[in-house]
Length: 198
Image (cartoon, rainbow, N blue to C red):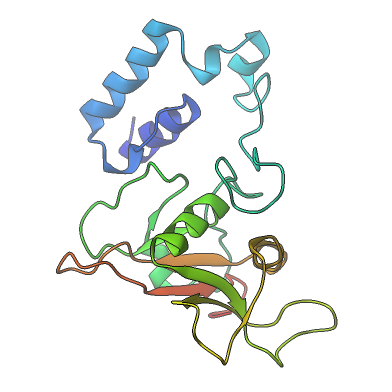
């Protein structure tokens, strides 16, 4: 199997941190889960045919759409593709879970996982926000994250509102964990694959 296929299979089996694992490690992790009977595919005869059946849905286990623990969002953290996806998205490492690690320092990352985005922002004292005056009817306008919570040009909103708008617009979250020199990064960009930027 190709490395990407093995990573996908490992995720289906419930193995975390697959993005940083080598091929041999992925094969071993999948085998170990099967031997111990912990495989997501072994959860029942139905789930052996359809990995999504016979188990609790991974999406929004928190139940409130707030990006809390277990809230992978409607696309299970997978990036949304489209005809106008940027080169940045194409060359970014996909992250679907907080357990996924960047392949190297300074690596460009992409996700739609509410849990990953919220955890990343809160580790940097980020607060969900919007730009006042950019609203459309009753919907939030331009989405931002206010680091430090002191930017008067932004209006703070709830994570629930922020993620509802993020998903309604089919956005991707492109970001960095750390810069090439190892220092924590606050770089992020929102992208709609239907047009270059959002």
